[in-house]
Amino acid sequence: MSTIYTSTLSSPLGLLYLAHANDILYALDFVEFPERFLAQRDKYAHQAHFEDGELSTPIRQHLQDYFAGELSVLNQIRVHTQGTAFQQGVWHGLRQIPVGDAWSYKQLAQQLHHPQSQRAIGMANSKNPIPLVIPCHRVINSNGQLGGYSGALWRKEWLLRHEGFYSKTKSSY
Image 1: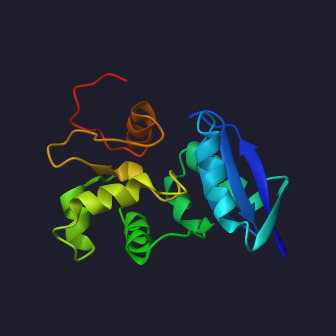
Image 2: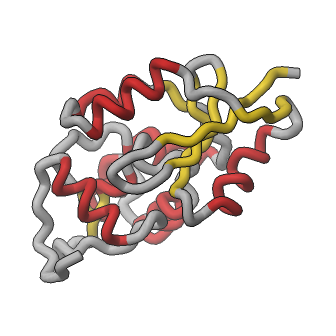
């Protein structure tokens, strides 16, 4: 049985929880959502045991580089997710949205060849086990509003600003 390590990393968005092994990221969440993080991590309980451990150097370095402004490094982080085939397709599609851009749920649905599945895509986004690295923050409402974000709306706005996209939202988070 393999080992999946649980680590934390300080970031401008607060403390991050990460589950990883062999330079592959299995789960990531924000400090105020430990139960959600553990639920994602524990999906691998049938094939691995868990230990606290140092964050692998490539993952740590890529995340630190991202927060330092080297925005293209997120796609260099290898991920492993568990979900339905539809969810997997959505999560893969999210990684195709260019840094500095944001797509509407409608645009993403069209890109994924599921033009009538905007709500289902929104649900898949809400189940994203690796927010930030699988950039569900790059999906906004068709009217330009931010929409939702499982990690808190202020983080979504911070991430979009960090990546150079300025939303049309009138909020001031």
